[in-house]
Amino acid sequence: MSHIPGSSGFALMSDKSMEFYKDPVNFCTSRIHNTGSRVFQARLLNKPTVFVCSVKGMKEMLCDKMSIFAKDPSTVLHQLYGANLVTTNGEEAHLLRLSLMQLFKEKSLDAYGDYINRVCERNLRDLALSSEPVAIYRLFKRLATELSLGLFLNVDAEESAALTKQIIQLTTQHWHGLISAPVNLKVPVWTSGFSLALEAKEKLLKIINERLKSDEDGFVNKIKNIPFPENTSATQHLLLFISALIPKALASLLTSFTLALAGSNQIHIHKCAQESEDYLNNVLLEVQRLWPSFIGGRRIAKQDTTLCGYMIPKGYSVMFIAFAVHRDPDYFDHPDEFLPERWSERNAGQENVLCCFGNGPRNCIGIELNNMIVKAAARYLLSHYTWSLDPPTQTLDYKWLPVSRPAEDPTIKFMSYFCQT
Image (cartoon, rainbow, N blue to C red; front, side, top):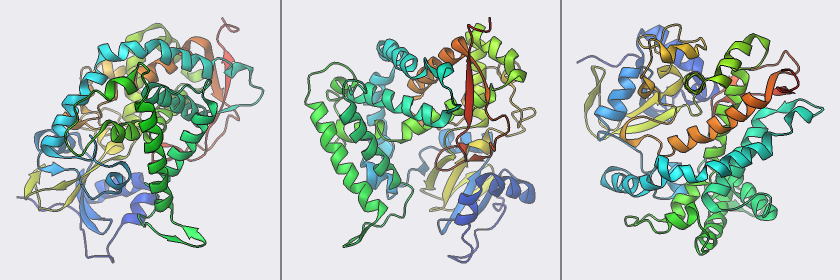
């Protein structure tokens, strides 16, 4: 049995958390190069951590040995969101998934198609009229937030502007708890970000419970009839579904899609994606591959085990890194290039090697809904506009935490497609 390449060192002195969070891409690529392995170890959050940067390792971790590599029940996510589909393990997680799957099946989602298209049109129809270039991440986050609240809580942004504004402020405050130190502290002149997040959580739960009492049709009415296992509820799951996680993930993908097709040198790809649904699917797969919304996911080894032939001791953290898995040269030719054609050539039918939203039996339950929304917005943009960076030279270096997006919000000039044809 082989020793894991790299070193986890000793407590505190060898911790590499700051280095990882400052530049996770360089952190991983430099260690892949130095160790000659796409599976290596280092100390993260003062805990020995195995980093998985290969398709083979990711599939073994999330599929073949899913029951061995479990979610950490003590995470900040659990404190902020409670027991739900994402934070539970074992039989409870399995039962929750079975209960909720009926709400996210393709047939169930068809009922939301018209609403999604209407919201996309309302948010995207006047882009060519703007006298100033459009900050696209902000635009897409607003669109995704409106969709999230409308789909999951039946809150219409136009009809309930004040409630929408209140929920957005609370979800933003709640989100900041995930990216702040988990210290629940109040003193006369200062309250920690984590404490403010917990306060926002209670206010959001109150709003959600009020929405659950209504007799309106839609998702909120369906979810309250789900037979949830003990310790979980419709309220806790709606808190997860309306959180800032979802709008940020959608905004991340739509921003990357827009940047990938910006400029006159991408007109061919633009035209092919506009004319062919299959090619549009390939473009969106390639966007997910190169710019996955989330950096990856973390698990804890429940027992001594192996991964890619390396011995993993019980209690070790194991983290798959999506952007590195998606650039595994064993699976992808020219892994750093944007090549939508790969999905109809060598990688045809291999969508299951992506882990943009996890992989295996515990992948994101909302993948189909995510794809539906991204595709609706992409179709609208493709059929109504061409676009380019404005100004043409911008810093597009990505930051990868908490979601992937350019560090500076890119600005785009949209031109009406109909005026040019």
